[in-house]
Image 1: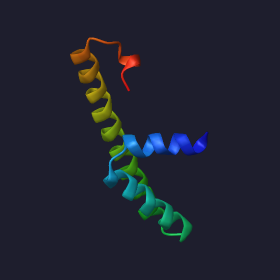
Image 2: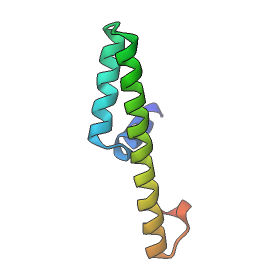
Image 3: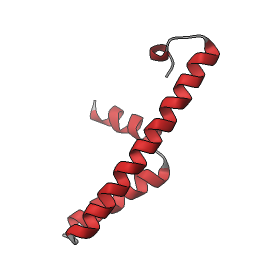
Image 4: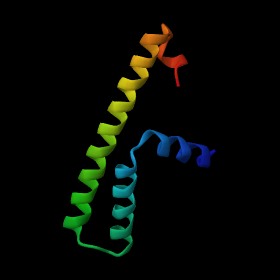
Amino acid sequence: MKAASSKVTRRRLSPKTLELICKRRIVIRAAGSRELTSKLAKQCGQAIKEDLEERRVAVMLEAAEAGKSIRKVH
């Protein structure tokens, strides 16, 4: 089940956001500075918010154009 979940996540997030997440993981594993880790975490959070908002708007537009419920459009 987890594999399907990560595929969905990759589809919803932009490559830029996924790259930020990977950088954050590398810094955490390398026991990097807290300041850098915190900065990357904030950037990741903001990028994720923006990506999901863009996706939400796209789904709503698609539903409106098709005249369907938002839940049925994916």
